[in-house]
Structure formats: structure tokens, C-alpha cells
Length: 99
Image (cartoon, rainbow, N blue to C red; front, top):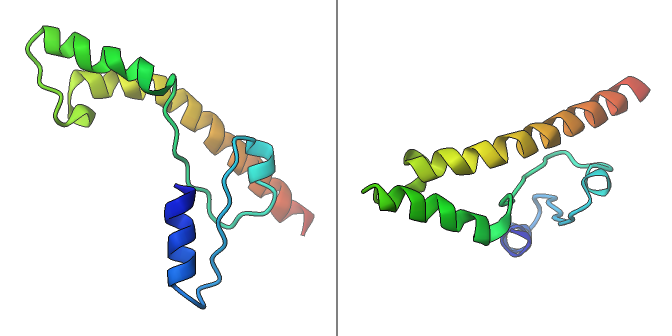
């Protein structure tokens, strides 16, 4: 994601875009105007089950987001994304109250 964002920032001269990447949520929220997340809870090894178990029961996984594998991935990811969203909200409220 950092490579893609950096490419856009460089190729669109004058848009005032800067891109950073971090695994430290607090550090990443020091002063952003936009937050983009890209993560996979459990990494690629956890996705193996998302693909193999539905396939065992005849479900193709070409589009996992609409298949049983997508549901299991969502069940792992939604709590993490909600935690990130709540942290972003808290930090944004603190900044707006202090100005």
C-alpha cells in the first residue's frame, strides 16, 4: 500500500499528498487527515481455512467476499477494524476539542 500511495503522491504533482506506513496505530494517528487500513488478521496462513473448508463442501472460492470463506475472514477482521475506528474517533475528538 505504501508503494501505491507513494506512486500516486509523486505522479500527481501539486495535490499535497504525503504517505506513511506504520504498524504502530498511535504513531500513525499523530496528524493524519485520512486513514487507510490494509491488514489481514492472522496473515495468509489463516486464509487457508477460509478456502479449504468451504471447498470441502462444494463452495468455489473465486469471490471469497461473497462466500463462506469471506464470512470467516470478516469475523476475524471486523473486531480489529472496529478497534481501529474507535481509536481514530477518540484521537480526532481529542484534536477537535483542543483547538
